[in-house]
Image (cartoon, rainbow, N blue to C red; front, side, top):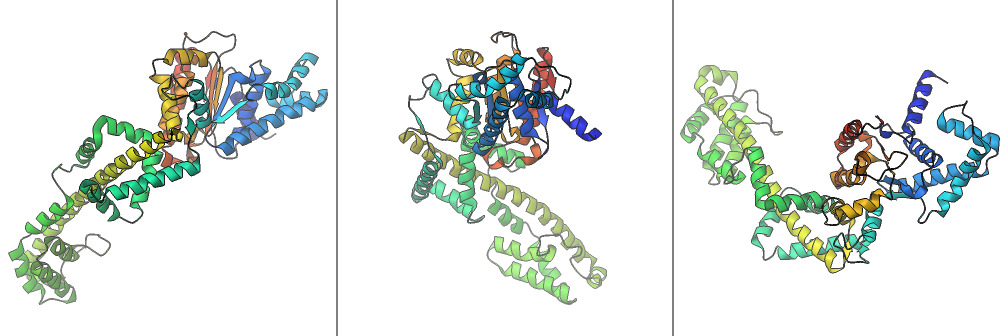
Length: 476
């Protein structure tokens, strides 16, 4: 075994230790799922009941893969002869000298049947499936009607389409919403659909922001961040930008530029066209060709050397104007961003209201609701302590796979689940309760659903501190 492989094997063995809190950052192909399966196997071998272990992951495919590999491992143990089983266990513990009694081997073989006989099977679930089972267990405490149902993907798409159509129809009579749609569509035909996707995927955080500040408050906060006054519009900035131009000086400069080379003559033509225009926005756009390239970059020079030598005042004039208009462009871009964001917030809020009303009319929850109601149940509900007590009695170990894809709300949920693991108020057991997280921040692909890979790294530091404060074992 090479030193690199030996080191990797030792690290994987450490990560599978059932008496440690573990946070694993690992690249694709480094054996993350194998470590997780080995950890569950060692938890079972150490005496943990299958129904006391909760494995969470982000997708159904990952949950299915994890469960399949775990049952494959336990199934192989159940039919292995003594020598083969000892070898498998030695590899699990990375210890060729480990001794196993006949009873140890018998217990290892029984784990497969024990896992199969566990009511509901091994708890290997997506986070959303866990939230659904939690809310179905405590519907009244969560403020939900018993027997609520989850909108499946096709039903959710139909509800989204209904809310989308309703919003567009209402814009015919709602001038504010109509103006917001015009602003958004001016930025591209796909902009509206993008807002709908983002409002749906990030509904929880968007909803909380709306509750705290409202659409007007969000707009004011963004304008303050961008340095744009509340009363300022991009159109007014453009109009004032042309009004503030030194028209007489530019007209005089155009006469001189006309006597120069082709570049000077082109500048003169643009200046005269701008001065002749009755539309200040068009005039400003026209004269910008004197100062900026087609790509929007500031030109190196604004007239030829012959003009600069013969009439340096013209070069000074054009340089001052270029500097002024370059600053104006930044102000206009900031104002346009503020206006587009305000329009997006208006549309997002209107869409969200319609979407949520349609869900409630059908007595449905969507995946965002599952997380929101579960977090509220564990953090804010009046029955919080009772629910946590019941869960503390039922879950000893939480393992989170593909953790880099969790959104902030999902980290809140996991934090609420394991909080008592580090507190003296948790139900006392001979074996420690543990949390295990594994992921790779570079593989996160669900940012459109609110995933924040940095939260994965922050979680590791949080657990390190919690474990240190509780004098518990932790490895990262």
